[in-house]
Length: 387
Image (cartoon, rainbow, N blue to C red; front, side):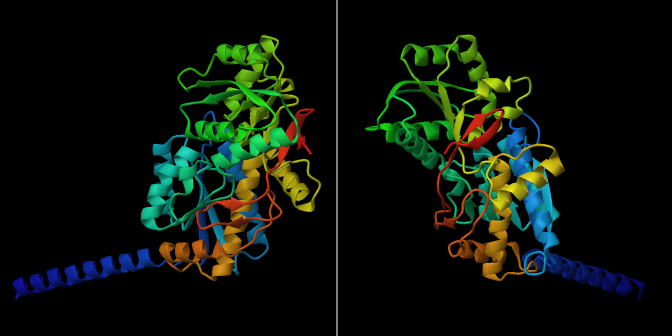
């Protein structure tokens, strides 16, 4: 009889285990939550921390505003961020950490290579991913990934058009990072678009992250060629060195960058007076006088003690874009991550958003945004509209 009881107990335990496993499967299929869980990934430490922290902080302001106003269709947002240190492998680790937390939608990753790496996972999990600032073409190669910013090719094309339309130069030099997909992609499109423009490219010099401390050769070639504008499709940390070294050698052309330049005023030990007159193509100017920008800048200053850059604005817009798409799709947080993704990516093709980075944003099925380019210039240690 004891043996029979033991057998029965074993069968009962197995049945209970199977029931628990089935319950876990059901939980995975359905979110079972009364809040939307949004995660963010970016470099919160290291050389590109100005980007990642801006993204995380900008998104936080949007989340706080939305929650205070009643949430998304009455549902609150839970928000969590993770550091990837500008490392693709660590970005994937950050994604898995957020996924374990219960993330349903991702704002990220902040940088291109990290966003591309993470998109392999969001594709497999069918999770909706909106990168605020991942600009490489391959960031949106899967149909579950969209972006807020311009792509690298569009930044290169828009920069060439802007320089030509505003008669900013007759001879242009270029310094770019050949080891970085972001920088080399912008350079290639800029060079192509420059053909037939009212200026001439007189030098185009590359470097890599293995030799990014001495730019004297690249600068000397631009100077000797008579370049009155130097195009820098690079990140702000390298740009700060270039401006410092150009000043040392007495070379003072107009320097023109793209969104990766945003953050140069925060570089430690950099003489920010050397950035005076530097121009960059960006959809956000903190000195804009519209109510949305004024309110955002004030909140950001009050909360984080600094002026927000474009990355913060991109992420702020990203959260509101997600809100608009969720409302359009009519999904609720108890749906599975995959169900939310399918509904939201379809809604992205139907919504029209107004934000800090554009008065009007729409999206193609390719994940690319439609929005107007703008430029800012650094004057008196701050960004002001170049128009």
